[in-house]
Length: 437
Image (cartoon, rainbow, N blue to C red; front, side, top):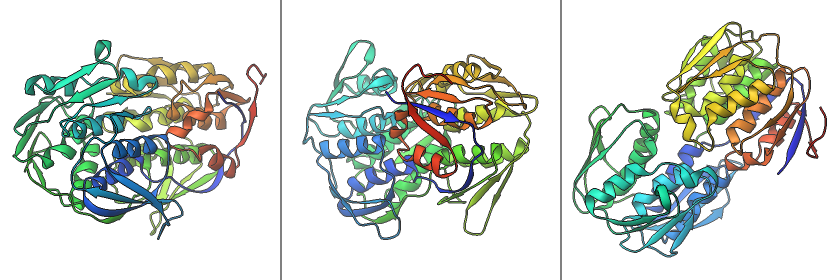
């Protein structure tokens, strides 16, 4: 475990944000399901992306890293055969919930046993929505106690009528949308409760369309999925990640000025709403003709933030709320409890250690802002990349140093985070456990 000491300093400068992890998963899956070679450019490699590539390998899909034509990041040549087969009987999904939930339905197309394993909180993250479908179809599967990983799927999904709740995770919907077009017959997927994170379903539908898959829907609650479809090869770039840009846009609001490059101003990513939320709080975020977004120093005020369609940016917005004038209420955030950690509990615990006034509710937070700033102290990342990065941003408004344990967890989504933090003027050093502030 790596512990970092951050000396408070205002950040300033420009950062090229990583490519979208959400779109990266989707692009390489669609490419892998195509017959032939596809090029997916501008991949920011992270532990989660490596997990999805391991799953593709287990399903008989090959890939190679190739020179990038337009970005300074990784490009992948992905070689698919248009179908899936079990080439490795066990696959390690790491700690990636997207990987696991996207890949389970594809594993259930193979007709051979395939075992999914994982680490950390992923082992216990809920999969009941899939188990209910398997039970209805008589598809064979085994799990550890309480439905935990490892999960072994052995059978073939059947075309027909499917039902899923919409208030657990859109990843279940996306997983079926990837797999069902490959079945011989047509299918209908009905959503039986209020749909959360609709924007993530939009990302899936847009990616499927790029690779030739046609899916019609009725207001996102009923999906008509024609069978016998073929994924089409392509050459595509992955756009910048708005959920990662959120850290820098908050940091710029709390610091001097930070410009985020590499973003798509017309993105379907739900986390793009971070600009609207920060500006609604009194921030100053502007966008130029090239799509570069700049956050300038500003005094902010408390507001009500609805987390239903943007859960990943809530931890860092909680930091901004902690030093804003007045009270901020975060609502519809219950799903943050089933991420890499219980993010509502984590942000309440760790920000309060720094001197914030955060109250945890069953599905949200109440934050009484302290515009004078926070104190500093020793905090823990909870082995969650978004908690670690949010606490790093919190250090900018502390009077004393912040010591973060478990800082290496940023490898899950943003391995270059600490490098970029330093390049913008952050003052960090690795320390031994127990070092004083």
